[in-house]
Image 1 (spheres, one colour):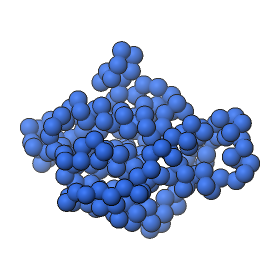
Image 2 (image 1 turned 180 degrees about the horizontal axis):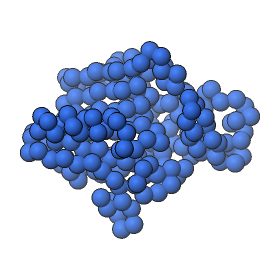
Image 3 (image 1 turned 30 degrees about the vertical axis):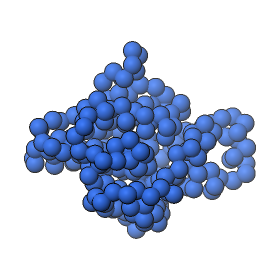
Image 4 (image 1 turned 45 degrees about the vertical axis):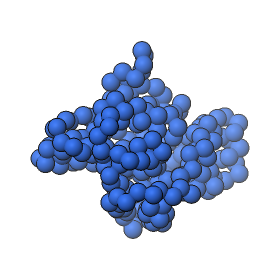
Length: 207
């Protein structure tokens, strides 16, 4: 899908004329080839529910470099795609890891349309709390000096830039109070080595 002259976002879109969309938002450095989006797509097809998922800039086959992206940019990508395909219809958000953070940002724009929220291993504000605050002084100096650090965690590599960390500070959501009477659920593995279970509890407390 074109979002401007030279920028395209890859999406999965399945329309069934129902009154509800399920919107899936993936995690950091993930894409739409994984098991989760395709599992939810199959679920929606069988029950004739509308489904929408996107790859943020710098992810999968979407435009741009990962290192140039951040929470603000990926939230704007998400808002654009929702406006374009869902318009005024109601939807339920399923956010995986970072996707939960981006999903929480959507309440600022679509509060009345969001009828449910499901978090999977939710990681709101992870850039500050799970990265920057835990980085050693040497790593922080390296990021400030070279503007890039390859963060390795549980077998995965994440190119982390200082602009990414700074932008995370601008997207605080854990002090929000979401006044919506909607279905909210959080799934989180107790053995998650990357994101502690408390982050899903923090998410639930926002509602």
